[in-house]
Length: 102
Image 1 (cartoon, rainbow, N blue to C red):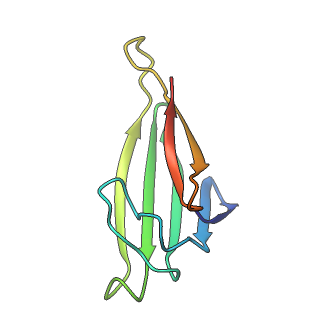
Image 2: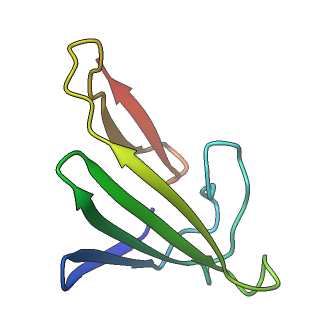
């Protein structure tokens, strides 16, 4: 999908992703992006069971200006929640897709 590089800024993990293939989608809704897409993600632990996630999306060919999403993530330790593994695989056209493993 792209090349990701991570680094720590204090207690925040910062992940910069570039070099995305334009034939892949930006998100699960099927929004397109160009090869100039740059995603900057920030993960900051805010308490024992909470984390702030921020992602800034820049793509000068698709968007007029960068935009940012923010979410508070909560760790649920109840048994009704299960993490699902996702694998990224390349199809016969060389396009990467995400596949769930159960």
